[in-house]
Figure 1 (cartoon, helix red, strand yellow):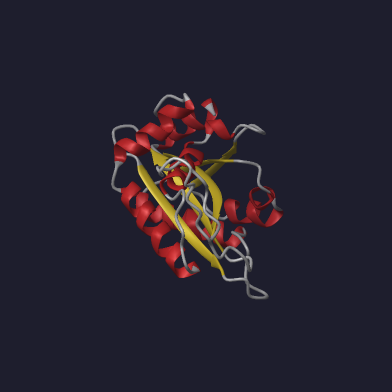
Figure 2: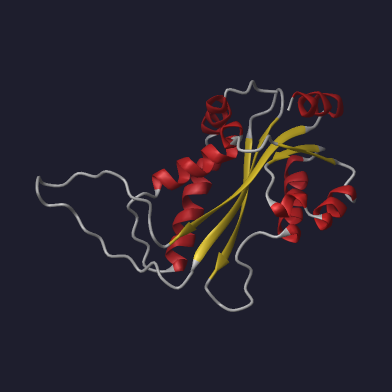
Length: 197
């Protein structure tokens, strides 16, 4: 990653950590308050394969406030519908990131098959403003975007979304709130132990 940092400094580029995640109608469980001996039981409709796929970028640049961008893909369980982010979706996210940040970007992401495919290599080669580096295998603790997903899911623990539209609305609301808290985004990087650019 030191190489990516040097390249970003030389190009005046943003260092962007990218990752994907997903949220289903079955909420994460967390501790809650209840009278002794009366464990709360919440029934949820978590069947049918409906889920929200998320792709996010946490961007850092020396002298600028950190930025967070995300895209959402809803899978309603219909035949032929994409279940997650493919190469074209990821390329569109990188294009939007480049447009929002207004400069070259250095992307650091994991070894997901969609990141390593021949199609993705062609899409990356077609973008002269983009440099891509891979994280070491089995090192999610080095990616600040993992902390973003963890924080978002923790905020939604014990949430009982009635429909997939409720889940989309709540997820979008949580992520939008997090976008406007640059100190939180700085904290995601600090939690990895990496030094800021």
